[in-house]
Length: 163
Image (cartoon, rainbow, N blue to C red):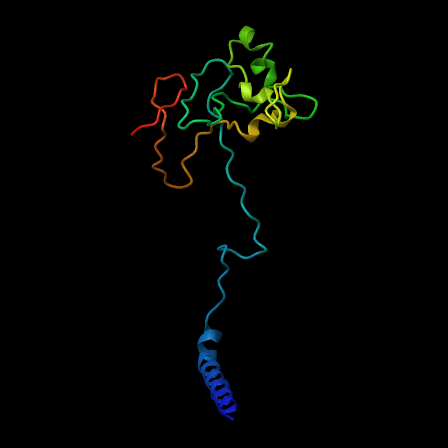
């Protein structure tokens, strides 16, 4: 009996609130969360120019933490896509060509399989360079960042923990 009375009062209270809120709800025009109507075509972001230019004329960008993949300091706009059959990055950074091109050699970790066994050539798992190595563009940061790395500048990429 008590449950029935409670349920009746709850139903009446909800109905009263709904009735009082109807004029307010009817006056407000819905506002989309994305700021425009769904039918509005999204504007593509402006294309940013890669920093650097022709490979070979830039200084290496200092790493900010241990095990950070080096960033790409030169433009990559005119490079071919990395495919299963070809990787233009290895033209300069491959183990057999880096000395002639005076380019950094791909890391030793790229010559190991998942079990850590040394391979004669770069691992197929490391074939897509831009998955980890990022070309730099001239763009403002998307969010504020006060990150300070643990590598001391001028140590040739070696890291040292700051106390």
